[in-house]
Structures are given as structure tokens and as C-alpha cells.
Length: 556
Image 1 (cartoon, helix red, strand yellow):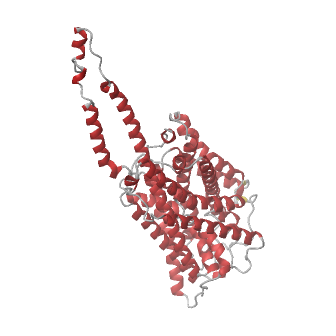
Image 2: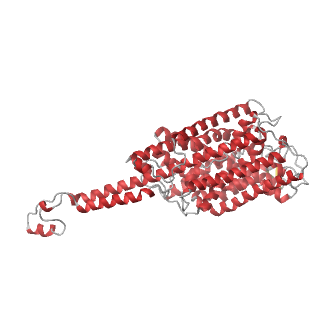
Image 3: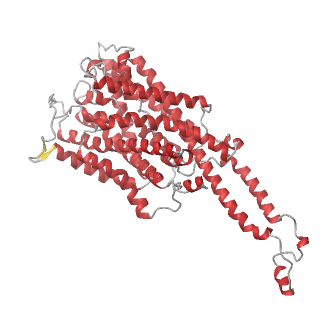
């Protein structure tokens, strides 16, 4: 009953369903962020062979973690159904107790006449078992057998917080919520600061070839528009516009961003293809080409720090997967997403290191197209590529915000049976999700110190450790509650079913923590190799857009 009480608050309102193709787009948009734009320089630092090998390993480990999360979602749905059936069965049995209870011999003809309608007049003529109740139990058993194959259908949206409530103990739940809250709040703070900062830099600068960017870094106090609007004022104006446009999506399900996701997905594909095509043209038209090194051990920690979270999507899978209409091929759908993204990443990085002098590759890859007319002198194209962070983070913000909202609700609802009032459920929780990160972004747009640690350590927990622990505990709970024969019929069970894979994922998480710590130490102990270009600027080594904060502005 304790488990049932903690899972009654599972949100079954998945909203409007969408096709697997739409699900593919949602997942693609969530994974592909601006972190991809920091990879080319990391490839150049560590070598193309090391880069290709590491990207393959990271993609596989993230896919492994994703299959675990989907499996846990299916187990959670199955246990919820089982608990509901148990509850309904107990209510039905209690209703039939009166029928099965022995009947006292009537004392009068009136009593005989009354009871003859509902019962046999003689106690001895009553069967030892109520045939109606027996028939119901028999039919129910047949129905349960027929529904065993469907018990694992993912129809209720069970967020990772609700999974933690179901399968972790008190210590595990506390650590989970601490980890995911830090990570998601950090993510939202990055997005809330990065998009307005990008718009500010584009609006206050000049990307035409006629305007050669100076090496001086603009200050927030510099004038942007007119005689009084400074760059800081412009940043806050864009931040307000960003919140007004994307903030309302937090009050609804992610399906409300459908057209936004489709539009920006097209823009991302076009942006990637433009950069890849332009670099291929540059390679084919140039007589001399850079010769990137194959492997450099000094650049591996930085490459790892840049790429480790380039396939992150586990935290938002429940919100993205549950509304998919047909889920029979979820593992194939996920695999297709990862393969496409892997191909994009490899094409982007390999063409970059063979097209540009590796020593002069910019931290943010789009700057190679903005700060120089060597590749293209088309002004609108350079503005288009400069707005890439806006397109990528603008669509990720609502998904992350909805994920945080749902997990906050799960955290505060673990012992609650009744749903929250409308104002609390639909107004307060969305505000709790977006107000703190927006407030931080309003005060400052420099979040490198904060995000450098929240992204690297909490991110490792969310991507690797939590899914591994969840699937381990969920499988054990499924065998206990549903039985081994039923638990093995999970159609969404991971292809990596042996416990060895869980141990491998946990070991990989430990490797991640060690390498990102090494990168922190290398960066903080000196200049991080900025002089010779073997290591990235330290502020670029952690999460997608935190990299964007500490770079010198590329516009005047």
C-alpha cells in the first residue's frame, strides 16, 4: 500500500499523441545542442583518431543508458497497472463478501418471501463457494493472462522522479532529486542567459565583411543602440522577450511545442549542412590542406570534457517517449536518432579539422564562418550561422523546463494521494521551474563557475549513474511484484539485459568523473594550454552553452 500511495500521483495525462517521426524530431532536437559546435577544436586538440573513437564510445554508452530508462518506464507502468488491479480486486471481493457469507434461517414467512429473491431459503442448499464470485475470479484470471503481454505498455507518463519514488529508498530519492534539480536548474540558467547573449551580440555587432572585428572585447557598459541603450540593457531586453515567448510553454505539455520543434529542427539540419558543405568546398578548392594529428594524449581530457554530454537526453525521455503513438520499435527509433546524430557530429568535426588550420580553430565553430570571410562572404548566411545557438537552445528550453516542472511535482507529491489544486498544479510548479534560473540570468550572464561543476558532476549522475541504478532496482521490483515469468515478458526490455552491462555503465561513469576532474585540475593549474592550442580554454570543457559565456565577444 505504501508503494501504491506513492505512485497514485503518476501523471497519466500525456496529452496529444504524435507519430514516431515526430518523436524522432523531439529527441534529435533535445540531444543536438550547441555542444556540437565545441567539438571541432577538441578533435584538433586530441587528434582525429582519438576523437572518432571517443565519439563512438560516448554514443554507445548514452544509447545503453537510454534503453535502461525506457525499460524502467515500462516496468513502472506495469507495476502501476498491477497495483490498480489489486486495489480494484480488493474492492470487488469486499462487495462479494455479503453474498458468500452464510445466511441465517428466516424466522417468518415474510422473511422467507423477502430472501427468496436474493438467496436460497435453506442454508444447506447453498454451495460451499459462491459461483458468481468464482466465475468472476476465473474470468479475471483469464483476462490477466491475456493482458500480460500489454501490461508493459508505456501509456502513463512516469517521470524519473516518480521512478525514484517507486524503486529507491529514502537516501536514494534524496540523492536523485538533489542531482537532477542541480542539473536541470543549471541547464535552464545556461539557456536563459545564452540565447539573449547571442541575440545581443548579433544585434549590437556587425558581421559584414566590410566590418573587420577588432580584438578588443566589448564591455556591458558599451552603447548598443542610440545614445543610452547599453549592451547590458540590450541583453535584459532580449532576456525579457525570450521569457515571454518560450516561458508559457512551461505551463503545458511538450506536445504544445510541436511546430516549434519541427521548424527549428529544419533550421538545425540546414545549419549543419551549410557548414559541412562550405568546408567541403573549401577543402576541394584549396591546394594546401592542414594535416591534423591522429592522437595526442594531452588533449584527451579536454575532448572528453567537451563531448561527454553531447548525447544527453535521459532526463526528458518520459515526456518525449510516452506520447508516441506506436512504441513497438522504440529501441530502433532511439538507435536511428543516435546514428544520425553521430554521423552529423563526425561529418562536422572531420571536415572542420581538414579545412581549417587546427591552431586557429575557434572555440565556437560558427565563429570560423563569422569572424572571417575566408569561407563565405554572404552576409545573411553569416548572420544565420551566428544565430545557431538561438535555434538550438530555444527549442530545448521548454522541454527542460517541463521536465523540471514534472520532477518537482513528483518530488513534492510522493506521499500525496489527492491531486493538487489547479493553481498549484498548473501555475505554481511551472513558476518554480522557470523563475529561479531566469532570475539568475537577469543578474548575470557569466555562469561558467557554477555550470562547470553542476554540468560535469550532476550531468554524469543523470546520464549514467541514475539510469543504471534505476534499472537494477526496477528489475528486482518487477520480479517481486509481478513474478519472474511476467517480468521477462517486458517488450521494452533493454537489449543489454545482463547485469554486466549495468556494471560497465557504472564503471564508465567513474571514468567520466575522473577525466572531467583531471580537466578541471589542468585548467585551474595554469593557462590550460591556451598558448599552444593543445587544450581548450577551460571554460569550454563542460556543457553545451556554458562555453559561450567566457569567450571574448566576436562582434564590435
